[in-house]
Amino acid sequence: MKTAINAKQIRDFLAPLRSQRIAFVPTMGCLHAGHVSLIRKAKASADIVVVSIYVNPLQFGINEDFSEYPRTFEKDAGICRNEAVDFIFQPENLYPDGGSNITLKVNAMDHMLCGGARPGHFDGVVTVVNMLLNIIQPNIAIFGEKDWQQLAIIKRMVSDLHMPVEIIGSEIIREANGLAMSSRNRYLSPTELKQALTLSLALQLSQGLAQQGLGNDNILEQARQCLNAQHITTEYLEILDENSLQPSHQSQHQRLFIAAKIGQTRLIDNISLQQSGEKT
Ligand code: AMP
Image (cartoon, rainbow, N blue to C red; front, side, top):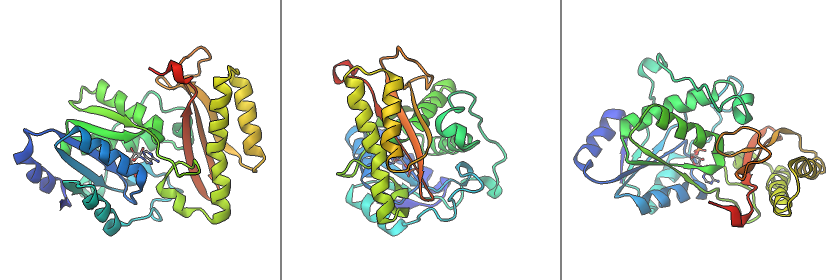
């Protein structure tokens, strides 16, 4: 495994390997089993795997946790080595002169969910993902369904901008108790960890209710009651069509999305409300 710390280095490493299939897994580090699942999917579908570790300043708001975001490079490198990753790309700074002179702007699918609460967040995400894809030029790139809106927007970017890469989504990896794995879970105190569990419990409850044929309003009401009982106030709790991210009561592809602050930590999660027989 080799580590590159700038664009030229990783391009030089990859130059003689271009005839092979290259898979790319972008991350912000502090790797956990969720990231490992993406790496394994990448390994299974390509010859060469590149993992990037970059805490992207452009996707953090002014009062968000950019400076506190955990940076655990040695441990991350150990995980990558165990997973037989070929290259880590860990740039110090991706933006020329430390600034971002040219950025991309998302004009669809970003007004709702996380986009509503974090203005400019997805502009920062697509700008950096675009740069990373231009640098690595992989055949495929793997993103987690945990960040469903991000995955949907990146798929749209690649399609709208005719980028020659296939974007692959990968299922959410959870702790044994159901909590979606996240680098931010380490911010939670033991009491907050217990409270955070209610997010996935509310999602599972909702999925069960959807499978019994309950309507969206009832599902949302019961999910809210479950969350209220643990004093959780949501930033959003919404059922949307999982492709368009628009409200749709008829959709067969509905998904419940949740964001909530547990203490100072903002967590997100989502679940399909499709009946298992309906999955396509
Ligand atoms: P991050 O390092 O949090 O920016 O995440 C890097 C990639 O890992 C993104 O594509 C995330 O969606 C994905 N990811 C993070 N947590 C999980 C999880 N629990 N299950 C699956 N993918 C995840």
